[in-house]
Length: 387
Image (tube, rainbow, N blue to C red):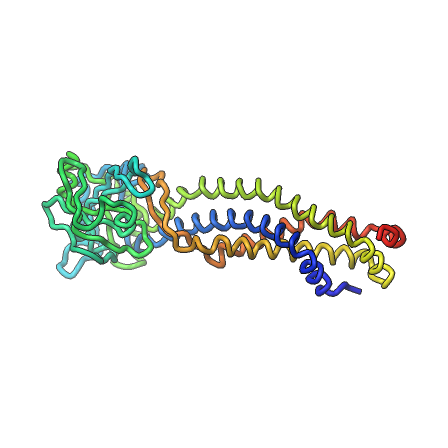
């Protein structure tokens, strides 16, 4: 015969002060874990939203990032002749020679300066991305004008529309703010390709070439064709693959967050265990009475174990509620591939909260097993005598 679950709820309500304190302790542990998972989830969302399925990124042979790659104009001209490349309405190949460099800029969270990526692009590069200017206008070729991502404009006072930033050989005017959705381009500064190359003395040393295949079936063939061409000496990959690989930037943060959560979990487990042992001690008479009424040792063990899980479950819900205000908040981390900051939003989703609740139930299971076993092993007469 099983003990009704209402018995466990009543006990938690009667001991509401102890219940709330223990649930809060577990909740803080869960909140740390959920916040860490939300951060990594936001970072992954930013990278996974970057790139188009038909786009192929071409780097120098062996290159792993645009910042460390060098692409000459001669190779670019050869790449454009590949028959697998789509063409725009003007019949021009959808191929964009681009350069990526890094500048330092003081921000609201980094008064001493933070590295930001500057991307030099041409008209085709802008056409390849689905990016809109939400304020101001696009830069004009041959001028020191820049368009900044909305996250850059939000986090860096110097990057506001109408202001100027010094880098390269002079002052650059902020003439527009672009919105790239959830993608990593929101953390970049865009300018005219030739002007960036000139200011950084890189006339024949761009970083990469972005190509668009004619259709989905042509993407693998285009990649294989470029990789197998020894004359070009390049490494080609899907643009989405390139940005997926950069999610490794969040690995150290995830490991650190999990480590802190485990340390806090040890204390929370002991707190839950102490709470349940105290409950067993105070309810010795109840345990004896339950045995007299015919409830088995297994029923008592199950009841106390379930009560511990209920307590931990409450803590899990509290932890998720504590972390929920983080949803949508903006933060930034260094991208180890480009050595520049990428800004993104915390993403507290059900898929992030579920591991937090499961983690809380695991704490409840660890903390409640020994007290439940202790309650089940009590002899009837000894339990009644203690009462």
